[in-house]
Image 1 (cartoon, rainbow, N blue to C red):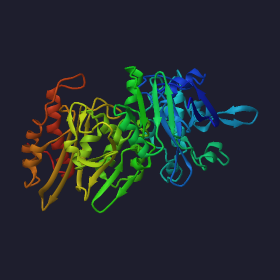
Image 2 (image 1 turned 180 degrees about the horizontal axis):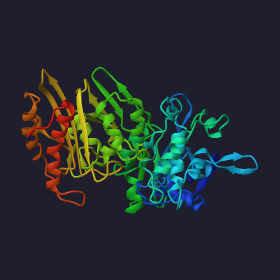
Image 3 (image 1 turned 90 degrees about the vertical axis):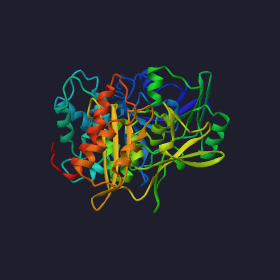
Image 4 (image 1 turned 120 degrees about the vertical axis):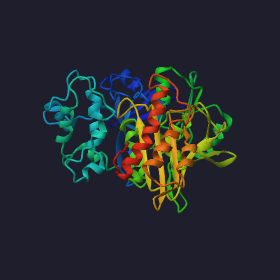
Length: 477
């Protein structure tokens, strides 16, 4: 195979000469589609946003806004992409007329230098056509979370917000709305062999595991929100890349009486939709993980696979008592997340193993909280992340799990603090004593995000905040 086939702005395209590290954004701009901009090359600004067509359970298509700078072109074989150039609609007397999103931004002064505007148009268009918005009875149903991953440095956000809140529903005959009633094309098996490296998308899980047996050092690719940054900013190149997020076995969400199983290949946005608040701790956490643009691609498998000590999912999953299901051609094994991390960006995952799913035991702890300490409230890397899952019986702590991130070489459980809470009354005195212990958990270090002393202080304060928020008690000296 020496070419990639995609549908671009409604037209089929065959692309030759694709290299495994070529990004969608880089290729688009080389084709003269310069509405997509490169602002940061790491998924922070949203200037590169494009629409990716994804299948719905009903057999239609959902448009998801994603960062074009983080998508590898080789990973899009068979799929459908829409850029800002493809969002305009056919108009009377002219070949192209403004889309309602574009029109509202223009009328309300939502564009100045224009650099960020195409990205806003794309993210707002994804929200404009979101099926749940069209069914909403609240205002116009537009969720501003849709543009949290888009940055504007000229007009500010008020006119952009005004444009979003002025949008109505798609008109009768809207060509994009009509397109969404038909199925989305699925990713196709891919085998791209070049002098710069190989890119594979195996057709089945069995094929993937066989390939990883042969190539145990291959780069495993799911959403690409971490690897894409390395490709762009560190000029990282993998000899072999194996894409796995399309595999059905990695896309399941299953409830049993004993546990909840979350497929490692499901995007965080898909998990959020399908769980619909059924796991309150995850429901609290989802909006604090990066931006909607990132969550539309990022996966639990990818977040755990990178093994970053400041990844936001491990503290939450540690508090939920989760385990990781690792699969290889030799079989599957379950590893408690508390024993999964072995060192800085190191885990027990063996060469040839794949993260298939995350398993959360049931029943869930009824009292939970997640606290992310960062320089910005949203779309930022945490300095400290703390998750709590607590059970009470008669006002006494019967069980507690506390997950911590950013305070050691790996995400950790706060075992000493947990032991100090279990069997004790859930009172301010108990919590204050436990908070002093929590302050000493881990080995907080100084870096450009925060000092070790600040991190330790935040550990103490999060437990106190959790207590007062959950009980409604007034703070006393």
